[in-house]
Length: 501
Ligand SMILES: Nc1ncnc2c1ncn2[C@@H]1O[C@H](COP(=O)(O)OP(=O)(O)OP(=O)(O)O)[C@@H](O)[C@H]1O
Ligand SMILES: [Mg+2]
Image (cartoon, rainbow, N blue to C red; front, side, top):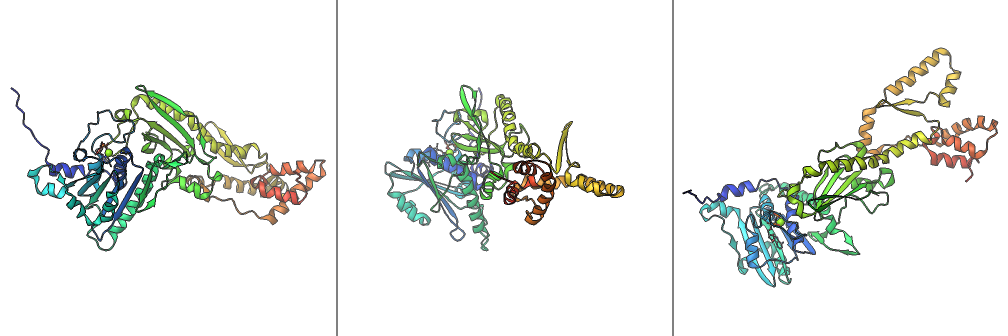
């Protein structure tokens, strides 16, 4: 007969390992918010205080709340089997988030909840678990008296008592901050972590925070300050291009793919351009943004299907997956990672290739303008055999006219000079500036007096041939350097009487 022994996991080591599964403050808070959203909350309030070195943080919702039995089961590690089918709008999967996210940030988790006007509260205190290992996982059931004794959140509890239903998740003993240091470092750290969390929440839950049909379905506030949705695709700007939606079918479920090309920097204000660049910048922030039940799971990655390139940096692709495909996307406990199933990688790659060209066009169009409409450019761009070379246009009248006036020896000097300028162009430096801060690149300031004289010099020989004023203007506007400043030159030509609209 086979022999079995019932071995319970050691609470001390399990707890300490669970704390290290890699949550950050922002992913931990997001995991708690998931639960509130699943519980149908329309207002989620995050409150926190440094509390002279005894910081606490509470997430309060007005969702369905839990009965006494439900909150007991919610506190169990692995309260729900990930293989169970969940309601379509459930943001949970593992039955772990409430506990793992909280333990990653604090040693004391208290859940106070109200359902049908009944209040129940439960607490895990990791210190008492480690101090009394023989008690195993013994959950503290708080009496109403004990709830009232949590003086840090007295006002929150009083307010809570007037509600039909809802839940408070309270973190105390937040030992991941520098609590012992009284120089203010811990408090600063807490504030900066909350600032990061704010941005993370505004992005992760933007689709819940957005106004639809004039109404917001969810409001989230941090210490009373309401958060704004941050939609990374900037769809409300007319210059954003929404490319055709595509659908991939997997196990009879739909994965919806919506690509966007964000506006080029000269199409939006500098402020807006920077806002959508994000802290990491456009180059980093290109890629797929995967949403599970409208909640962002993973962002700015091409899943190593293609490299992140300068030319595709304005491309962001929204992928919507239902929670029924969780297992195939390998969603992790922290809801901060996912990867596409092998069977659709190829299709995703094809989709990227199709849309990649669109992303590149924004840049190509700019390039085209230089070569198509400028008939006499200062620079020539030649692309042959996979190589692109920029060279000074030696047939430009400013160069040919100068050449004509020079002695043979000086002509050679001019050639040397042009060759030096072409071959020593600081390509790498320029590339890195374009990549990092294109909006800071400026042409030299427009010198009106200089351009006025130069225009006169170009106009004089044209007057001798029998061409109309408008044609003179048109020709000049296609010659560099005039073509580089079309707006200013048009104004000057109008003033000189050569441009009639
Ligand atoms: N704010 C809340 N309001 C109502 N019920 C809640 C709330 N928070 C947690 N629960 C209940 O507790 C259960 C356990 O939550 P927990 O976050 O640990 O797991 P989960 O959400 O089921 O899955 P996951 O590990 O993927 O988050 C939930 O399934 C839910 O029933
Ligand atoms: Mg959860």
